[in-house]
Length: 412
View 1 (cartoon, helix red, strand yellow):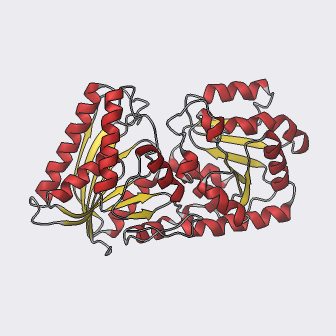
View 2 (view 1 turned 180 degrees about the vertical axis):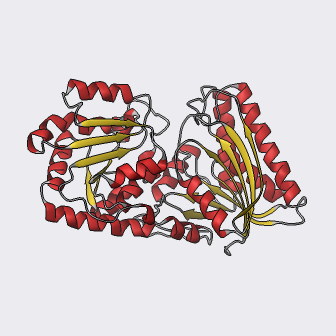
View 3 (view 1 turned 45 degrees about the vertical axis):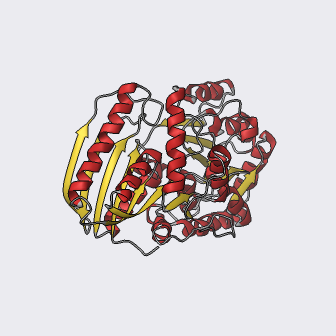
């Protein structure tokens, strides 16, 4: 794939920073001509639809429409009016791009859709001759449910399958992410695939190790599957050895009250600090002030339900994990996530089984030996350099893999 000069990008966004926001920023800076269509996720607190046109990074056109609806736990909302609104906004974006491309007389080199609905719209643009290549940037879709409505879930599955087979390129986070998608949707034959993992902006992170700083940080949604409870469980024993140990929890979710109650029951509420929802910039500042990153998740075999974030092992890593590595924080992660293998192999932290004893031993091991900590801290930063957003997107738009612990390069 030849590196493009012009691009159209459709994506849904919430309130947090993530790969689509990083890609949006990259394309705005790198493309000669760029159109961004930004749609609100159902659970976004700020509900607005926006379309913007850039030339060499300069904004030429922008239209933003505020949407009056209550945020919802599902991506697109779960009411008939939500679905109609989604379709209406997609049509508005398609019509604007038809106008910009003069109905195909001025083609864009590539169109990217960061979820199935957006990727479907991008495929339509290609079929109508407005973009040359269509990319399905599949960052998530191993999720079992997008609605409480079985009919909508069935339609959604058909859209996913269509995107997987019709896109010129399908992006996956790592090899096991693709395995999870195939397990859910069947033996799909993509036209071409590219491994595009999560990344990090190294210039936003402090590179110095935090010696004698006994703060562990978690920066992710506080769902039951996020595994935050495991460290809280062993905090009483850890405080006997490391009295000034703190566990900083950034993020919110339905499980947050349960975690807060658990901390009280264990008598560690003064050492487990819940910061709630923070902006990306605030989260980075907090991460930079801590010494160890927490990326443990409840393994699938221990989960009683398939929640919206239950496929994290398949997805490989999270943005916050990469940012903690970029801040020179050794990572405590559970075996099964893609990044766990590299953390272990590169001695950039410790990958553990889901076990209170292993969690306890790991925290003591990392924080009780300054020399070991310095080595792990340096290795964490070194590992993060492999995953700078600039390098990831440069490679992805050329159809080249950034491979996460996977020697197999898969294309056509």
